[in-house]
Length: 270
Image (cartoon, rainbow, N blue to C red; front, top):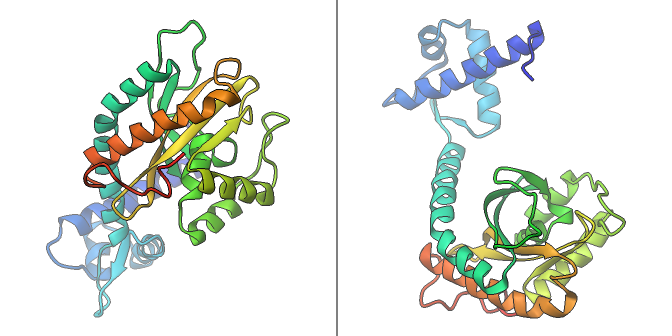
């Protein structure tokens, strides 16, 4: 629902102006001074200064040695991630389809965004019982196999930062409810190379996931197999994990992250 209050209108206008600052800096061949930014966008210097300070704090803008402003490297990072994610989805699809054919369960491809995972692709089998997830939806990391799979192979400082941001909402009686319990699960995931959601997000639903690693062996995404707990039984998990490991190895090779299909044996061994 659109916010039609004066405050809501101001917030939208502020966003428009912030993007206008980024566009202006992006179109310039050289860094711009505060006066140039204010004049070009017909803003008071104090207003332009506030926008630049906020953008600088978020690394969208950076200041040169002589006090002028240019686009920040955070935009470069975000642009690369956007390209990578689109490419990732396209390259992952044949591997996901093979995975679904092998397991006869639903496969998801997810990425990390803050303390949540976002579903960027989903392929279903020809089954009568299907998943209700949709592409573009998100769920918390603490109760999803994809979230735990990514968390387990991040650097410690990233893990600590994400754990501080998790609200630990309960969805079922099995949902992990504390940072300490999630730490235990992360350690377990790291040791065995795959993560499990044992009816933690939804009653009767079990999922297993493995991370997709980049050239630095850091997780850029995760692939999961999900299905009703009466089909995805505890006894089947090792077999499904093997199919998942083969799937993510193939995706990583196609993305150019590893050569020869070898990869990180510490992660890719069930």
